[in-house]
Length: 297
Image 1: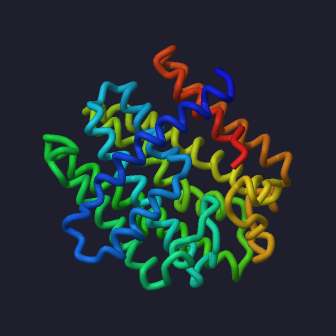
Image 2: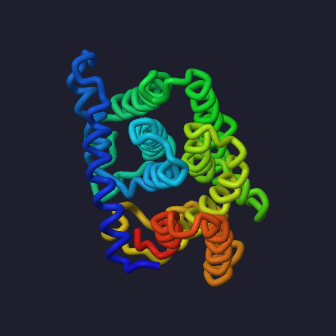
Image 3: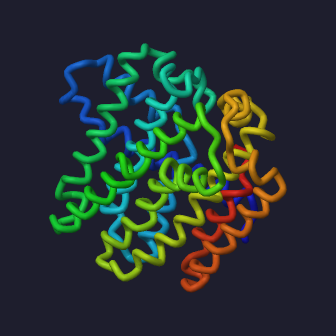
């Protein structure tokens, strides 16, 4: 594993280049409302780790996918992620004032704008995927749209968010929490890891990368739950201890911090075993996978 500075630089360099190109995908000249454009751009400009796009990009590099194809697919999944955060922060859900150290969309603008920004980012994601620039093969574009629809919708992220809201009113067991997190967090990681297989025409590798992503996504969520308890609010850029204040069961509350930490290490170890099959070509992916549980925010 390379140094922490290497990982930080890798993510920082990727995010800087990716964000500039992502903003360029917003069809500024076709948006009739300058207010809407500014709000959409604001959500991208506040930044983020861009973990889903960077995993998608690195797996694409591993499988020989063209850069434009992987970028547009990575942009689509990140726009879905951004839209979900905008809606997640609303008063009717998590009611957060801060995201990534900046005002949340409804605080910077207003609630109605935040709802419309989320809607616009979501539809833009699918518009990008449907375009021939994403891949010349229309069958592959349809497969991507189908997979992202499932990962983002009622069978995936949205379904998981609903379970999360319901968890505020009832106690969940470990199996139920695993399922909630698989849907809410894991499904977009799944898309990020299997979409390169579709782009490369290597569908036989989909199952392998689904296994990789299921371990990765759950490890990511355990680390997030640990940061919610142990993290510094200023460093993380959002409120901490939200789940405990709401009385919600989490993997940490059921397993305890040390067992949860050990579980995340086991999950990452499982993901690394899959990557080691690719040898030195997977060095960046290996470092990024380790970063999932070593990060501070």
